[in-house]
Each structure stands twice: as C-alpha cells, then as structure tokens.
Image (cartoon, rainbow, N blue to C red; front, top):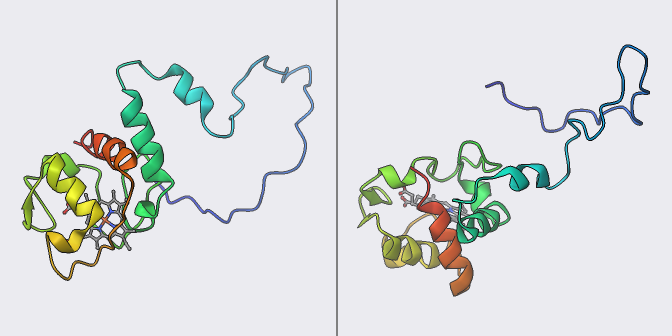
Length: 139
Ligand code: HEC
C-alpha cells in the first residue's frame, strides 16, 4: 500500500456539475465525515464496548506511538499492536498477555516493567475497560 501523503493539496472546491455522460448519483459514493456510513453497515456482532474502545484508542495519544493496521493509528515509537493478542507476553516478555496485565500496563507501565518508555496513561475505569475490550480483538 503506498504511503498516503497527508499534506496533499485540498481537493478542488465545489462539486463537479452532473453532465449527460456523468449523471449525479443519488445518495452516491460521497464520503461522510466521521465514517458514519461504515458504522451503519457494520455487523452487529461487534459489541458497543469494542467500538467505543476503538474510538478511545483512536482519539488518545496511543496512536502517536502505536500503529494498528487498518486504523488511523500509525505511530512508530512503540510496538505495532495489529496482532497484539497473538503474543503470549507484553513488553518483551515482562508479563503474560491477559486483560488484567493489559489494564495494569496501560495505567502504569512502570509497575510491570520499571523504566518502560511508555508513559502511564491513567484512563478512567470505563475507558480502560472498553479500550482493553478493543485491544483484545487484535489478533
Ligand atoms: C509516548 C509513546 C506511547 C504512548 C502515548 C502509548 N504507548 Fe504503548 N507503548 C509504548 C512503548 C515504547 C512500548 C514498549 C514498552 C516496552 O516494551 O518497554 C509500549 C507498549 C505497549 C503495549 C505492550 C505491547 C507489546 O506487544 O508488548 C501495549 C498493549 C500498549 N503499549 C498500549 C498502549 C495504549 C492502549 C495506549 C494509549 C492509552 C498507549 N500504549 C500509549 C509507547 C507508547
């Protein structure tokens, strides 16, 4: 996949006028800001907690340091989390990879691995639970 150039010039202003050979498509392929089209068509088996956890991840500093392919997260400072749950341990073997340790890690990495380069994120319990539910879908 080619790298997207984020600072590309803005698209030309105005809608192209419909013409005989290119008619306007009613309700067509126009992108909706916020990706609402995508969430409307998402299968119901993705739980609300996971969706919310994903939103929290993507709006928190996590994405500055971590990448998850297929999401907006493209940070390079920390490990890639795309297949997080395929690993038996986190933080290079510092602790078994389970939900308790993931939560403890996110709240205070130093409690698992002193001197870790990841800052304590100090989320509230609700955000921590949903965020962990999302991380646990990364296989
Ligand atoms: C300032 C950069 C930074 C931020 C912000 C950050 N992390 Fe990290 N994260 C790291 C680094 C660096 C490591 C590796 C630490 C180590 O192994 O010592 C790491 C490790 C992890 C791990 C363990 C991954 C593995 O495979 O071992 C998880 C899970 C994780 N981070 C989740 C998060 C989440 C969730 C957030 C947001 C709430 C977040 N991180 C925010 C830098 C960051």
